[in-house]
Length: 514
Ligand code: PHE
Ligand code: NA
Image 1 (cartoon, rainbow, N blue to C red):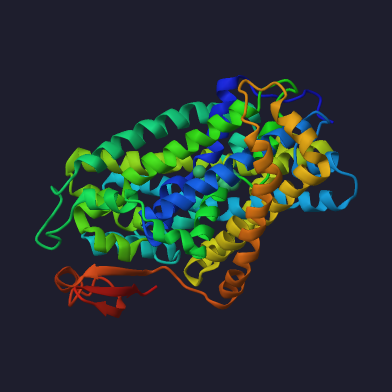
Image 2 (cartoon, rainbow, N blue to C red):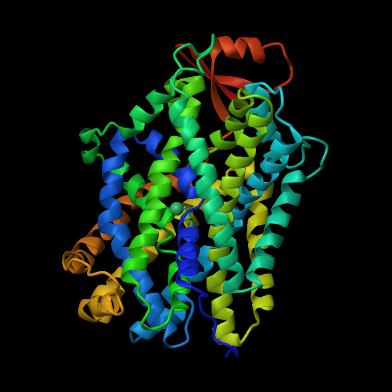
């Protein structure tokens, strides 16, 4: 047993840490891509429905179970779930809530390390004067770790290790370290996000060029925000919406239980959970849709955005577009954008380290140092394959199995536990104990009936997709270019290697060679 009981320093610190846990790369990289790939406005309705009927209920369940387990000195899901039910099986199910975190942290910190490197490259002016193809090519050589970009060999590996070291060091300071990072990082993230979003909504048609005469930032916004009801009948859109809600709210992972386990018994969970959830949604739905999509549509046109929607856009395209702002503005835009991503990332990856540390401390009396360093080492071991074999799709496999499938499985099981084994009456009482708001009773029935049914439906209907995923192995080093642009910048230049793999009206799809 640890000598001193850890607890959150203040309510503001707790809320910012919890919001920092939720607000992450998912809000800025995953959400816009999911929205575009699933029909823009067609995605938003299922997304909001999933937020209300699965997201909010799961937040309430996880906050209250976490606080409940914490009362018995447990800070990780194996023992938190164990306090709620007889029978050993729940302890083993709870193991999900530790290992999923290590697997997700492994690849998540890799992207986080790109953001650190891109802040550096923005400041030193690496992207200055680069063509769109050069910037895309830069990314491709960066992730092909054996190629050097600007002379630093194995740069991607070095930044990855630096990023893990930084996470480990902060984690070794305990909750206080996490609170401090959240107090600095969250306000800066919002500030940078608002500045870039203002740019996104004011760009209009001023970015149009000879090559993309119809470029218009408003097209991007209209596409995202014009609701389309026909998609409601499409199960694929629902699955994507549910998956995004899980990932973005950090539910089904064990991090929320762990953070909530450091609450005191009478601390509010109802208002806190709902506030952190809404803060995440504000950042995702408002800021997350006002940056990449409108800015890219403002320079390259909506067609380009639809054809290229992929999370590489943030790294392959944005630095090029920022160059159009010229000089200091280009540097600032790069620092704001990648700095925002960095703060979003680190406040989430720190959360992923805490369940392991809590478990080792509760059960084996490990110190924070020992817990943090062992977490860093595990993440490194799990992460190296994604770094070394990035282009072979290992990264996507991690994101799919650890970052998508296991969240749904765990969320389903914990909801069944909460409503039917622990019992909804006790559960509802837990949620409302010490509550600073009065939740509508409606949610009690949602948690009892609707949430488990929807989760079960999502689970069952995603099984065919699991099979598909095992079979197919797609890499993401392909990009569409306008053909006149392509002719001008690629053909005969010899600077970029790869091949054209598809031609469609005015576009060619180019596969970069690694
Ligand atoms: N919610 C985070 C994001 O949007 C990711 C995350 C998932 C963080 C699970 C912690 C636990 O990026
Ligand atoms: Na999020």
